[in-house]
Length: 291
Image (cartoon, rainbow, N blue to C red; front, top):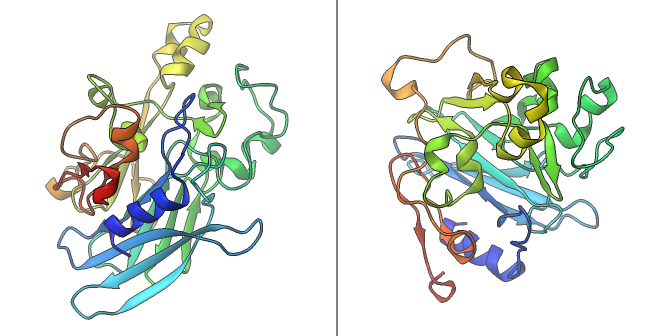
């Protein structure tokens, strides 16, 4: 399904995606490899009561080879409390692709065991808390045919001292620090854009463990070291392996994940049609009747 058709479908099945509180419109954005040959898109599917999710389509635009399958760990994503914010990446060669979830729970729910409330600090949480399924599947690597290569959860990423920054408001779950350059003068057209960088060849993901804007206020009494804490992380999008340092090869240096202007929160975000190659080609905001 094309990106325009997917946007139209999402608008039809959920015309009133809630914009109250912290929740932005849900999405699962597709991607094409840097050479344009391999394309992966996603669309919401009804698999039966309690089993709704997303289906991917992988395509080689040169040979017309095609594969479809279900994406794991993604909520239906079009409801206020089960919203999905996910980004697909297609590294060179097209043999694998990655799905990255930034600020949402997985389909498991929205309250981990032992949680005392949205405003509490998660100091020294239990293993049961850290392994809660709602914190899982932040990054999933797939073969082109749909077999899962690796599933990476928050518990695989966060260090013990970093759980204090995990907080949530309704369907939105925060655990990463924003990049300041996309937080001034408007909103990134996709809320996930504030939390990561990706290499131009879509093979390396970068993000920062630390407090988001809300967590900064919640940990202000914990001291400057906690408030100012930031730890960059780099991950291979071909196999899910963590990298020791930031790559230096030009096409593998993570950059701002989109080009183009910031937008206004509300209809501009709801009516945004992203690009399949966001680091080179800007998406656009279109009126609903044009979708």
